[in-house]
Amino acid sequence: MTRSTRVNVPTWLLHFTVVSQRVVLPDGLKPAAVEIQDGKIKSIRPLKAQHGFQDAGEDVLDCGDAIVAPGLIDTHVHMDEPGREHWEGFTSGTQAAAAGGVTTVIDMPLNNVPATTTGDLLLHKLHASQDQLWVDVGFWGGISPANAHNASIIQGMLQAGALGVKSFMSPSGSDFPNVGLEDVAAALPVLQRAGVPYYIHAELPDLNAPEPKGDPRSHNTWLTARPDSYEIAAQSELFKLIAQLDASASAPGFRLHIAHVSSAKALPALAAAKRKGLPVTAETCPHYLTFAAEGIPDGATAFKCAPPIRSAANQDLLWAALQDGTLDSLATDHSPAPRDMKSLDTGNFLTSWGGIAGLQYALPATWSAMAARGLSPQQLSQWWSSFPATLAGLAGRKGAIAVGLDADLVVWNADALANTTAGALRHKHKLTPFADQAMKGQVQATFVRGQLVFSDGAAFQSAHAMLSPRPCGSALLRTAL
Ligand SMILES: NC(=O)N[C@H]1NC(=O)NC1=O
Ligand SMILES: [Zn+2]
Ligand SMILES: [Zn+2]
Image (cartoon, rainbow, N blue to C red):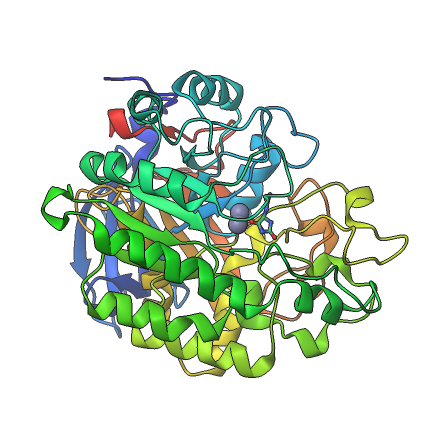
């Protein structure tokens, strides 16, 4: 299959060498010269730190001490198009990604309308995305009670190019019905045989829970409405289902992936499931790692998301779980909405849209907190590029700086502050809890398959790396990889 929206840029624009004293390579942070041709990494040569790069015959983009890393792969983004492009949309969403050093996003099957639950609806979304993509974009299909029991519809989504599928176990807040355990159980063997991930929003609500009490302007009221027990219960039920599968029937690439783990209390069972060898992985998000419930002001609904942001003590345990491998990756769950849906006039956490806009700030939010903990840029690339590429089935093509892979690169300064003013923000809506935060990790340039899609000032533009004049991202379809 060759279905693709790739735009061909003349190859003479795409032969140059990126040089830096700090390139994130699979075996460490090193001085290196990365040669790019035809959108791929053609060669990687070591550099002597004290000498710099000297080869008169090559077009060199010298990044000095800036970090050159694999572009980030955000596997959890709601672009909301078609149908809710007034919430975000592919143009603003992928421009924000580019400005944030995110070179690939995988779009969720909701909150676009209708939700992406058939192959035809995926093609409809693909059509809507045409000529709007500034970074590469893949798609998850959606599993709801309406298609979970129909293997040919699920296979149809995969044949149309979905990289895997996604379900909610609690109401999604939009028009994508949540599944029950019987639906998950029906879909799992189909996904297992197909070798694709099953991404799950794992909160299992207690249907007998009383209506939330307390001041609706207090984040604490929202927190008590979405207790840790919802995450614990959902994961526990999922692990039981996964354990019942015939492991020998799993094609490579199949796994259950737990979206946005917020509760540290769910981590011991997750770690135990992994120790048993169950095909389970999990992510958390920058907002859970950088904000704490104690610090959320009354009425500040920009912070509302599900599962909710929990305590500072909980946050420390999420960091520990990332470091010990219980959590595998990071993703933003970028889920913006128009201002009026965030109940800013009343500050009511119970009526506000649940969803945080953070796509453009993935790198600085993560890095600021990592730098404070003494963690390394390689570690950031593991959580933001390497594992996400594996999850999305893109590991042979993206997620590392290695010969033969797509030249998806982010050049970033580890010490400079990111510009977090509204003027620099490319999201369609400027409401974000990261607004005006002092965060280290300034993205200086972003390359998607060798094409410059973002440059902070003129420093990284040259005759050989000119800012792309038009959307040059591709749709990443499973059937065309
Ligand atoms: N519908 C939707 O995007 N929901 C997301 N928002 C959020 O805070 N958690 C989600 O799963
Ligand atoms: Zn979710
Ligand atoms: Zn989401």
